[in-house]
Image (cartoon, rainbow, N blue to C red; front, side):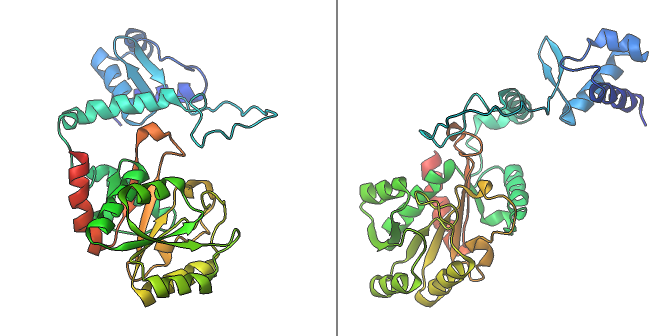
Amino acid sequence: MYKYQSIAHQILHLIEEGEYEEQIPPVRKLMEVFGASQSTVTHALQHLVTMNQVYAKANVGYFVLSNNHKEATVENSYDFSTASTSWTDFPWENYSQCLEIAIQNKKTELFTYGAITGNEELKDLFRKLLEEDQIYTKNERIIITSGSQQALHILSLIIMTRKKSILIEQPTYSQMVHLIERLQLNHVIYSRDWNKIQIKELEKVIQEERPDFVYLMPRLHNPLGTTMTEQEKKSVLALSEKYDFYIIEDDYLGDFEGGNRYQTLFELDVHQRVIYLKSFSKIMFPGQRLGLAVLPESLLDDFQSFKEISDT
């Protein structure tokens, strides 16, 4: 073990013991404590930074990256006026430090538009995140978007330019309805039951209208809050193969399900019929504008073409 590694290990131990709670002592003080040179101590601190144990503030010093969370306070009322994360509860300090590190490591990329499909390292992380939910795919099929709303907009443009049609439920996500109305998309409405999807009635509408895309929110439906059963999901997938249409699976609240027993339509799909959309707005904040789309290979070229125009 190198001396800087030994010092880093000792500093980490002191942090765990509560000796260093917020700020790490100055470099000169650490040089005295560990009997090491300035470069060795600095190397040890930088090593802890890369381990995400401490962070540096320019011209100030090094600070402990806290993993502690304040205990939740019990209140008599709940604010349902917004679906966004409360800014008072968000770990701003940790987020700010992550941004600082990212800017330092990727500062040259700030002056370019970047890859159309998104940063490859981030896509790789997203692929691993999806795998935790039993969603397996290749990086090539993942496209990072400015929130799920951009993905819905691009898909709507594909539908419009291909002169295709889309089926939506009623009720459904209000922004999807507004998007269809403003782009004047050719659309079909299926009036669903408040508690479940009536497969026979859905098939009847699909058989008569022959939509090319079907927009669904299988998990924690907006605004109903319902979740499709396994049988409903399998039946819808069977219909997509029988009547040759794509399913847009908007999984915007997937992170709130808990556990990994739930199977997405994408996970059950074996014919590349499902377009899977995920948003990070609800677990982070809408201003982050971060989402992803996992697309069938047959739609990749068109999606990337429209995204290039949208991004530049």
